[in-house]
Image (cartoon, rainbow, N blue to C red; front, top):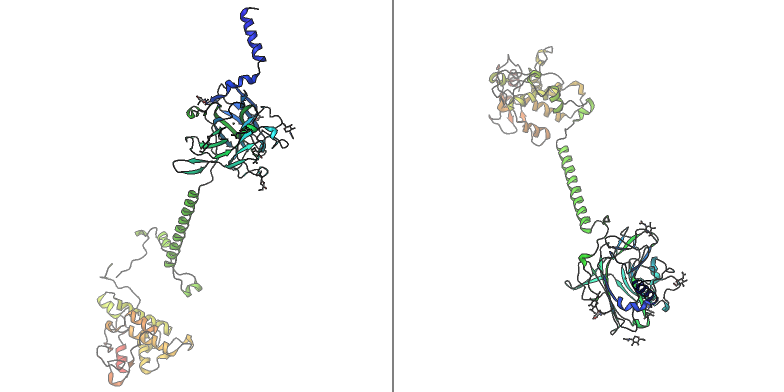
Length: 535
Ligand SMILES: *[C@@H]1O[C@H](CO)[C@@H](O)[C@H](O)[C@H]1NC(C)=O
Ligand SMILES: *[C@@H]1O[C@H](CO)[C@@H](O)[C@H](O)[C@H]1NC(C)=O
Ligand SMILES: *[C@@H]1O[C@H](CO)[C@@H](O)[C@H](O)[C@H]1NC(C)=O
Ligand SMILES: *[C@@H]1O[C@H](CO)[C@@H](O)[C@H](O)[C@H]1NC(C)=O
Ligand SMILES: *[C@@H]1O[C@H](CO)[C@@H](O)[C@H](O)[C@H]1NC(C)=O
Ligand SMILES: *[C@@H]1O[C@H](CO)[C@@H](O)[C@H](O)[C@H]1NC(C)=O
Ligand SMILES: *[C@H]1O[C@@H](CO)[C@H](O)[C@@H](O)[C@@H]1NC(C)=O
């Protein structure tokens, strides 16, 4: 054996036989800005370190427990009990609405947790040793589940646990924002990295736990601050580390990104920029925020109102332009053509399809050809060749008489005095037997006064002098009973002049000039003689 080999041998023997606790003093401070190449760590359960230095305590499967401890024991007694630690963790649940237990920073006399169970025991204790002073365990739990058996306050809390998972003190996860001067909520299982500082001062017996989101400085005020004398709780040599556990139903990943621990003073703050990044994760679909919900409701309401408005306008328009169907049409079917049908039938009103043309009024007032039915044409129309509203009134008068008497204006096959309807009616009027001209098919089934009114009106409209004819407005008023029909007195003394009511006036007199247009139309020509020859 060479001298060199001998030296190495003795060194090895020395190392093996040396009390490992003796080394602890030198290992009372460390910093891991990410865990790549970290070889002083003891990993068990599902814990593993990714190549980028990310420490994963549990993966996405359920019922997982993973632990990572600094593998050298640290001497707490009789040296100072004070310690300080800073770490960054992240809890990434598979489903955002379901908690998955969480992570605990633990100070324990042993790294052997084979008897411990996961879930709510965080992989640190079990049902039989929970709460025993012999555990010598201090744990800071970052709990995402509310376990009633441990008096948990909610499903997102931080607790200080002594020998038991029933916390001595706990609080909902929050951090103090010095800018705003208030505590702000932190979601432990948001999937985002969260910083934790744990500081114990043995002189003041004070244990502080402080949380903050990744980008924040250490807040001035801790989340938890409690008086506790650790000397009776912890053993002389302890192991420090983290345990993470998932529940039975849904999995989720627990990560530690960096960790510094100091027994000799304040733990150095981690170099946040050097910490490993979390695995790319599908962003859990957020429930729509209140703003989005309100916006959606508002937009929907506006749309509904608009649609209803349009529908309303549409129906109003439909109603407005609805074709009025008359009673007689019901019986015989509609006698009308829609513009669309006319347009189609005439191939868009092309000239070739023209049938005929008419003249309009841790468009072409100078009508040259008079077209019409004999009996309906006013006498002056043939003379001046110009249609007026009065000529329409004349035709209307002829029509009224025709309907009332049930015959055409001119029927040559009749007795001579009956050939021209208007003459015949006027003659009978003067004789006082006007109702004798009424259509016999009516069988007397009418009101005498109404019938007389129609006949009188028919005669008046058929007057040979245009000025004597009433306007259509007056006609409607007479028919509707809104205006009193001028009483025509037939007196022998007023031949050639008709009296309107009590007023005798040449202006209102009806005179029927003789022999004008007799040959052409023959309607009003003879009326004069009859009028004059009457009373
Ligand atoms: C999670 O880890 C356990 C134990 O390390 C392993 O059996 C399981 O397959 C892993 N599951 C996933 C989804 O990676
Ligand atoms: C709980 O753990 C303790 C110590 O680790 C062990 O002695 C005990 O048997 C365990 N109990 C159960 C129910 O696993
Ligand atoms: C747990 O809560 C119950 C009911 O509120 C209470 O009676 C009990 O004292 C609590 N235990 C602890 C350790 O706080
Ligand atoms: C704990 O927090 C309180 C209040 O901020 C502070 O006065 C005290 O010094 C802190 N103790 C430790 C050990 O950090
Ligand atoms: C803590 O407890 C130990 C043992 O009971 C005692 O010696 C020590 O004085 C206590 N420390 C404080 C600060 O009260
Ligand atoms: C521990 O504290 C001492 C004294 O404050 C400091 O010099 C040292 O850098 C710290 N080490 C760590 C790892 O925090
Ligand atoms: C937490 O503190 C320890 C040590 O002080 C006590 O022994 C426990 O009883 C106490 N537990 C609770 C729930 O307050």
